Amino acid sequence: MTVKEIINKYGNKRENLLQILHDIQNQSPQNYINQEDINLLSKEMKIPVSDIKGTASFYTMYSFIPRGKYIIRVCESPPCHLLGAQTIFKVIETKLGIKEGETTKDGLFTLEGTSCLGICGVAPAMMINDEAYGNLDEKKINEILEQIQEKESK
Ligand code: FES
Image (tube, rainbow, N blue to C red; front, side, top):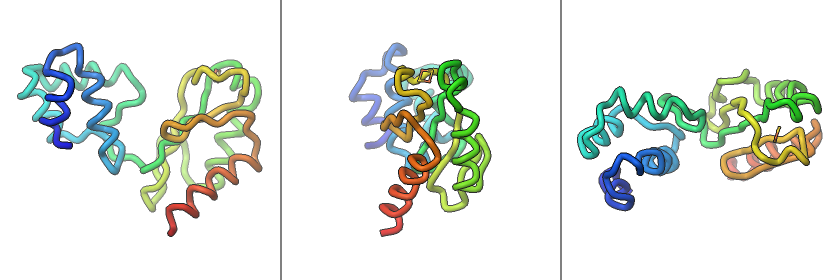
């Protein structure tokens, strides 16, 4: 879908901006919203570029820089923190060779921290794109990441 088609789908009212940004980012292979699209959005919706960026920057799910195909979000809120979120980060960092905020060289994974994902009952938890994973330990994380790597290598 083009940016114009996405705008038409929701209507060019300001209240639809977040949903439109979400869809633009979702269809980007690099999981981000590029400057060209923001300019077009600004023109079509009559919202200043700075306003669009300011609004989106309130939400951690939007990015203006290219990211991996899979965004790993590790929960850092207290329940997950207490049950080992830092260890979860370390396991992923070791496995993928990246630190928080970085993207793997093959463009497959980006590692990010996030606040509560709403699944504290299975802490420590993370999400990879739209999929949630709980009760994480080293073995489980490695299996999840290896499954994705295998799928992508085919
Ligand atoms: S605190 Fe981690 S999912 Fe709620």
